[in-house]
Image (cartoon, rainbow, N blue to C red; front, side, top):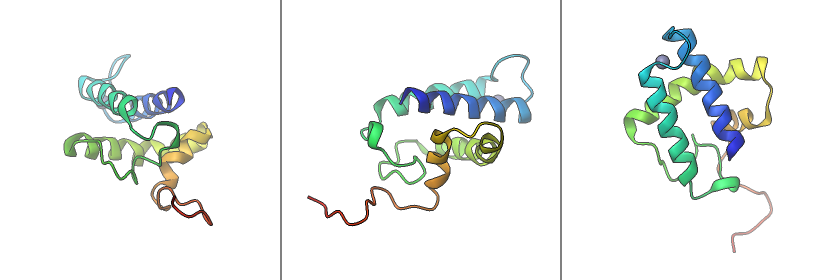
Length: 109
Ligand SMILES: [Zn+2]
């Protein structure tokens, strides 16, 4: 989860620098988004086992924040893959294609 928070921070940072051109830190809007995203991550009931946030059945982001984080993901996701191929990043991108919790061949309790 810690790593995930770092990835989110990097993505928001990239997005903000490119689109909002802040001086040397996040603009207030993105700062707010980052704080919010971290809070959501910390409270995510799925923790280490969770699916990508885009597919998460909990929908823990409130609508305005959700829209913003999606924009960030859409912008920064592919770029992160190019410059920073971390496994965690795939977590977000995979979520757009895969169903959550689908471990093939295993029945639910
Ligand atoms: Zn910004």
